[in-house]
Image (spheres, one colour):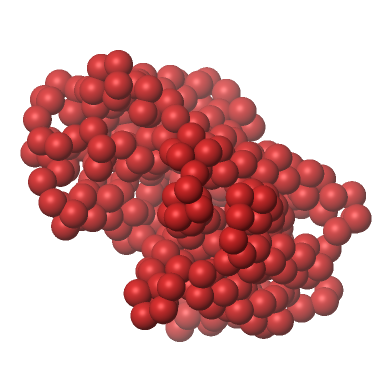
Amino acid sequence: MWPLYAAGFTTAFGAHAVAANLGASSADAVTSLLTLGILLALYDGAEVLLKPVFGTIADRIGARPVLLLGLVGFAVASGTYVLVDSPGWLWVARLGQGAAASAFSPAASTLVARLNPASKHGRAFGSYGFYKSIGYTAGPLLGGGLVWLGGFRLLFGVMTVLAASVAVWALAAVPVVPPLPRTRQTVLDLARRITDPAFLRPTMALAAATAALSVGVGFLPVTGASDGLGTIATGAAVSLLAATAAIVQPRTGRALDAGRLTTRTGISIGLGLAALGFGCAALPGVAFLLIAAALIGAGTGVITPLGFAALAASTPPERLGQTMGTAELGRELGDAGGPLFVAAVATIAVLDVGYLALAVLLLVGLVILRPKRS
């Protein structure tokens, strides 16, 4: 399992280490806000398009080869920029990283499910989410330090070594998991599966959790700055959010496996905590900002392992790759849609109203997204 956790860390670190430092540290490549936006979208855009594709391929040829291919591709894409340190190749490297992450991210999720019995899925996905959260937390901090020391060339060099090392580790330690026989699936069959409440509810809950996390990371610093806080204090609030999400996930998974928590109840609790967090974010003062960060982190940390465990439990083993890839697509849409929604409301009114509008949506989700009682 450890190489799979390392793969989760790699994709999260790769996404945030570069994105958090593009605007401030790459003036030669980022010549306008539009350019910055396109560069930021390259990684996520590739994931949105390719994750379901690579998930289906993982079902067909096995998840382990797709995992290894993705990690090697990530190392090659990162190494390209190390060898050719120019603004144009930054675009190529970023697109290549996103495409490679689209392969090994759903493959790793599939292997987490295949290599663990259903009774341990909660703990397995909780631990996997923990290490991804560590990557999200460490990415901006470590990435900023590496860029300060040696520019983006050093950062991409570290990512090259990281991805290559994880690939070698996975090759040596991850067992071969052969693909399972599959019945022929038509487009209509696929449509039925992805519109089935057993798939749709946990996927939309995961999308809501990712939207809440993205809004918290992106907009809580803006609120902190308006309250007179410096960059260190606002950074601490974001770190509190990410650290809380990381700590909560393994504990939630263990509670699910032990029968102390059900998916239905847990997703409701998670959505409620996140909604309460955004309600606190709309209140003035540093104390409410920190409480909001902790609540949003806790809410997303509760939902994430429960959502993936529910998907694994309701999916035929021979279709796990396709399910995980499509669910990851839902998370990416939430990652992009949450900030866009809050920004649109804030443009019409103020940011606090945007927080409250998202809180209302999460409360609506509390009613309609939780899985049926088993």
